[in-house]
Image (cartoon, rainbow, N blue to C red; front, side, top):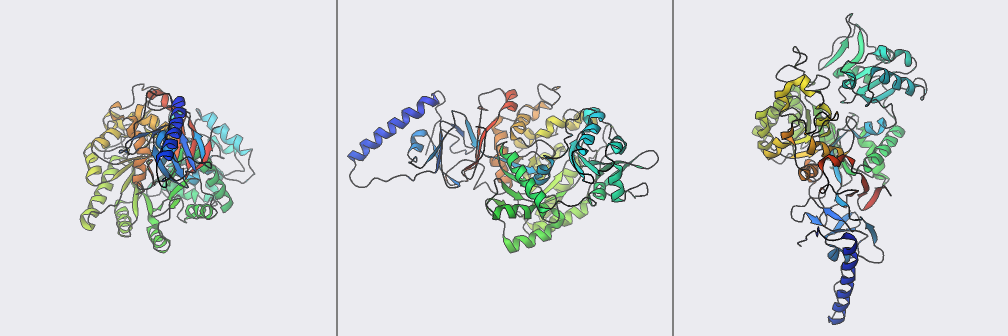
Length: 572
């Protein structure tokens, strides 16, 4: 069925006019037709007065959507969709606003993000004093002995000086503190937390991590990557009540951002996240569709689970595993071929030895699991592509949907390999306008040319999927789209865009958050675009992204979010 969007029509008048016309034509046909008249099914919900971008290349634009149960019944003009309206149909008037497929966030840390909503907020602390005071103030609001976690601080906000336990010890004598840098690859512990974890000047260095020490060899409290495990092992794991509350908070939060599905990157080896989602699913309480990914090193446990229980359903999917090649740019733990420009003796490191990663990845691939591996520095990305290529050569080419998470700093010669190996670049565009404030200071202008190389990857015919990396970044597809289209850094110092040649179009960014993200979880047949038979996951915005200037995208608000035909968020 071919449908055109009448861009020059008045949406308010158009709906009433066509409704009257349909009623008249229907009456005439009923009077003139001999025998029974074939009636269209009655929709449970119909969205009218809309400008619908479907992400369906065969029918990209429409005016209305009919929903039956959890699935889309029809997409088309108001004339076509009015035929599905019955006495029991709920009508949602979009008011001429833009309707899109529900956003899919292809990389989140869902429960940690949910927990962080009720923890100390440090992301926008601008000075060491503000950083310390926020922690001290928060400590007075929670019981003595309770761990203070999350935080998501950014030392670049005050010039790059790393924090120290001395900044917060006097303010938190009765509270162990372990607050993360916003990238999750570095954290600050106070003296009480270090004491509880048994970390002192005699603690040996950690492979794949770093204990930052002062001139006397004493820990400053900052721990990087694998060294963070020293303190994390002393933190009590959250109980079921805390996890259920985190899921509820996270679901409510992402619904307000128009997100209908997430790929959760598995933060506990004990499958605690999956069990939390299962509890909610069994009670019919899931409001967000979840792909529950587990740590790569637990691949055998995941393979056994899939063999016994299958890969889940349209609400809760399993079968993916996520590993780490290296760390992050902001923590100087991303693995590069050349040293960091601001620390010439340092080129980062592998969190796990490549030989160990190859063993895990090969085994997980043989078990039929989907690989999603974190690689940020060019050396980490290149080595991971080598591993993928070696597996394909030995085990043959099949539809694996391999992913590289972040894929931030790519060696130019490796860009084409994403396409050649059919590797999905799972990227988070907000990082570009965040890191772009200072990235050239630490990797130089030349390497920056293929940093967050959205345009080059698409030009190479690679698959691109977008997400947020929440809690690391705000869970906002709107801000992600703004970042991909404008690349204007958060400090407003790059009004034409940081590395502007890597900007992409609005439609390309939308596809990466919808159809592309659905492809990244092998679910493009059921979600990611609006077409009959697909899941009724939609979002209504308060402005038309296609009619405003790119710089205005950041101000757009979500009006309504629908998951499975049910409204889970409404600004009304």
